[in-house]
Image (cartoon, rainbow, N blue to C red; front, side, top):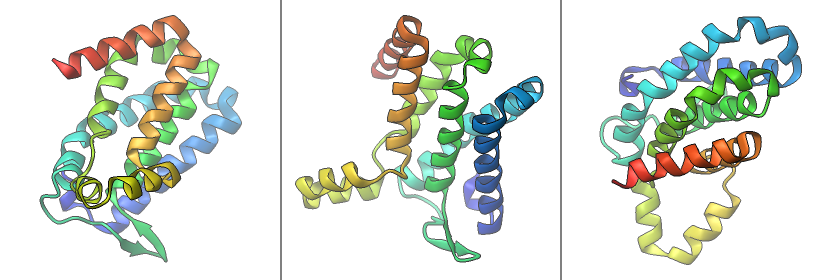
Length: 177
């Protein structure tokens, strides 16, 4: 997925779609359960194919960053979009109705999430400028891919217990190699 080719409105629409899906899963999980397989498939493809574009734009800081574009008064950027996708995934993982759909894919979910959780070029600069201030900002920042990824790992460990922890450790090991 090439985020650099997307208009701000396209990113905003995708963000709203994932926000709506999050509400549907959290509030109407029983009603949407029978239709979740194709939604999860499309969401997974978006998440998986978006990682390279995210890495190019946000992590390495290459290309035309859409940071801080506004659409109808709201900030629109790839970081916020992917945070919303992770929020949707956290909601699905935390809903017991979807446990059988998620369990076979925990390793891939963690492995891909770890790639999203890299420090961005801006975060690296902030760290080098003032590490203490960076850490304070990290603690207060609840709308970042890094924080969302951490929350996703916690949710996987909580919901899938031993299996979740094993898959998290396997994925971390695979990333380290």
